[in-house]
Length: 139
Image (cartoon, rainbow, N blue to C red):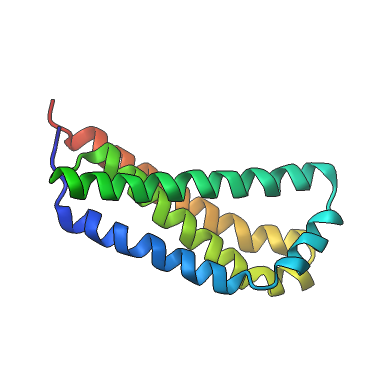
């Protein structure tokens, strides 16, 4: 497998806890979030809970992947992908927290116009990252 520089994993291991602290500060209005989730439809609640679970899995997986690469002294594209997912999911959640006040006053169509480009950009970068991993991985 191809080697990824350890500096990438060092940055990931440092960035993920920093993003989590920023998220904790941003989510200080937890009771307001609980009230808004209680008012959501069943489908929206499932989506919210699913996103939280996905966030936890990717962030924890990314942090452990970064630490594993640092402890073993080498990393591959699979570990790098997990680190990237952890960092990017944390950043997406942070962006979502910053956009929440704006999203509350927008109509449903305006919210879609704001959110879809962010998701497409994130997916595009992820696909490019995976493409690079597949094409440049030595067998």
